[in-house]
Image (cartoon, rainbow, N blue to C red):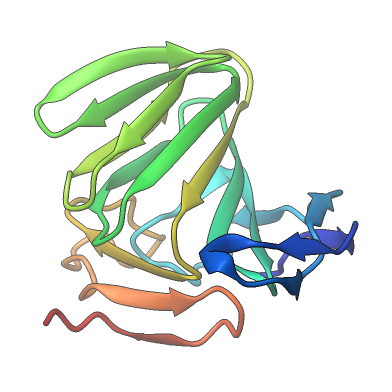
Length: 176
């Protein structure tokens, strides 16, 4: 997972909590390095027509997944221990949230509370572009369904795991 290019824009003054201190610069991220989802690195999420980029900032405890969902591709049913907000930039997508399904498209925003099972399927005739925002640089996922990579069709979903979006380290998800 390669973070997108970013530029330090400006430094400012932070006056929260009654103090004054120099704040970190604002991160501007663009020109993402999209990676295909067909290399088999995630045996539960094989989507040969889709591409993604992981965006993190050294000064914010947040992560963004920029994604181009290929025609007919589905992000498998999964859940997270943190909230997620998805912005739909283009395309036609069917979003499953728990036991409900919604048709969404360009300009729509879906807020997914922590623990809610969700999936997305591109129902249009061109790639759908989204941005998924997480309030942490540690991204967890528990697959409930899979898009199996070739040769793994009979396997169960892998155990839940956490990806540190800054280092790329993958560890098992432990729940307190």
